[in-house]
Length: 373
Ligand SMILES: Cc1cc2nc3c(=O)[nH]c(=O)nc-3n(C[C@H](O)[C@H](O)[C@H](O)COP(=O)(O)OP(=O)(O)OC[C@H]3O[C@@H](n4cnc5c(N)ncnc54)[C@H](O)[C@@H]3O)c2cc1C
Image (cartoon, rainbow, N blue to C red; front, side):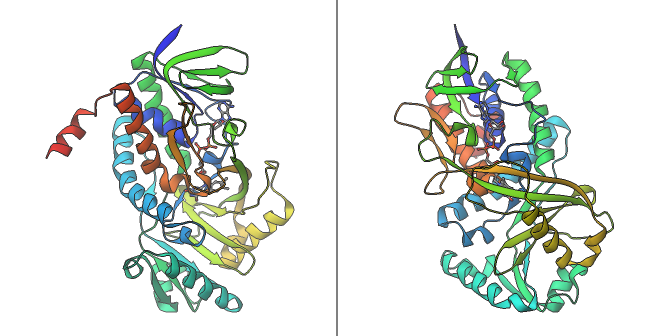
């Protein structure tokens, strides 16, 4: 029998956000995930969740940059609403990113700066990137006082705590799904997505008015060209060490970052390997991530290792995201690659508007009023 409303396969970053946005518009939503809501093996809970529209220009194009800037503005409102509705705080900061390099690696820093300059849209360089000297580095991050002669400051960038975001979305979804008669089906892998049905691995066909594929790398078999790009991160606890913002460490062989989190935690990431191996973190990567952290400041030497994790980023051949109906009529949100948190509000918002138009869902009343004003 057909259930009215929307069936979403995948309760990761894209699936949770889209489910919440559609519930706000009054849709009846059902969510299916291969794992349980607390599982941390996929890309979403593994990520550092840095929101880096400028730094990512070294690896991405102007569209990602533009989606990222738009999403940074959207996150503020989305997170405020989530917090107000669920009472759960989601750490979100927009205080920029500091980029530094050790003295022997200053050539790599200069190369990185020229890459960003070449890719920044005309007229944006001045507000997006500033050269900083040792005293400015010390003023921005007292921990790094005297450790680096020069660097770059990328003032527009931000970060959020993805574990808190996942929890807040789960709380909002529990309330919303219960109110609309939908459900969150955990441990229910979906093998195929049709325009109006999700086919579960046990053979059950769940029918809806409309189905959406948000399975990340789990959509590999149905989305040509989708492949995994392995990433590894280290999470440590170092309550005595203070950093206000993410710091990127440029090195000729790798570019790593240290992102502060609430409660004295730091995430160090991330390797990028063209490999579909999602097995445990290698010794080489552990050494690289740990050395980067220790070389930033020796006080990190006493940090406690909380987690070493690896996951696959879902990437399409052009490394661009997709949020659209394909030729067969299936809605897919995928290909978020290494920018999921950076661009999710803009990309998911695109799918939200398209699906709402197809189903004739109204805009939430307070947004109609705002748009009319
Ligand atoms: C190490 C690392 C660091 C990263 N750092 C950043 C960063 O700093 N900033 C940033 O913007 N992005 C970052 N990313 C990228 C970001 O995490 C991804 O772009 C984003 O998580 C992709 O979202 P998604 O919902 O498409 O996929 P996922 O988050 O992977 O979610 C997919 C969901 O689908 C479920 N699923 C899979 N198969 C099935 C199936 N057959 N049936 C049902 N459900 C299924 C999974 O269980 C999962 O819940 C990082 C990623 C990694 C791995």
